[in-house]
Length: 320
Image (cartoon, rainbow, N blue to C red; front, top):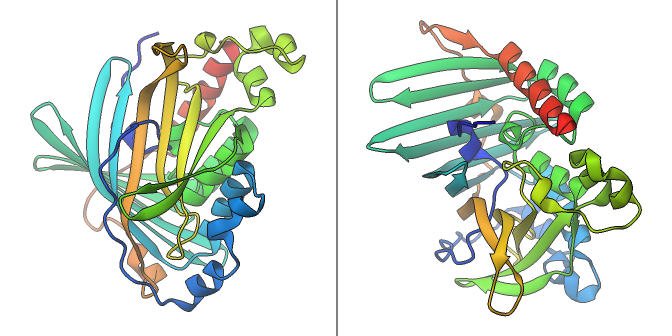
């Protein structure tokens, strides 16, 4: 099957660059909510016996209760013989039961610069795609999309992470679908971090590899080479180990194995990498900051298209 790498795929849960530039310095934070979050010792929790699974689950929970957050982003995608790089900004605000999200992304595709903005108020997702002087507006009904996704998970395409709940959703799904190993203390620039590596849970692999289902559930090793090209073999996360925003996910790295190193270990080939840096707390953010409705512009209603792609992705994986 031939695949085209859509622009939205760059804005996904993401994969491996083994060496990255130092993260920008975070501004000093005095927000009371963060002070309370930081006071419970989770920045050093792995030293107290917490597992990688514990850290990822706690990171997802904290993202849902954190005050307004904003971070710059870098993306790198290497899939289907294509390579794309981009940069942008991610912003989120929790307000009662609602999660407000915005993602701005710029991509260099050949000699052309393209941009994507996604804005979600929890009920609707608006997308604005721009190329040169052309702007295309589109809308997705998130209530309907979530209803369909609840029937197809864990097979929802990773490119739907913004539509289905942003960073908190992404972290929660990773904790649900992967088994994470022992956290490793490290630093990026001046930032202390935890590195945690995740492998597919057997129950998920059995669903992704139905021909190997019985062997996998019986405890045998899976042949990961049979996974479709767009499915990673593993993921590495970099979580904050400081008192700024404890356990904030600074990097997502998805990879596949390919060949062997000189020491005999399998080489990790990067697929998609998403980095977040220059993290800031934005307690002044309000739901109105995420309001968007096109005025005199026409827009495309993409709910049916999103639903169809969601069902098709589930079917392709189930038929694999």
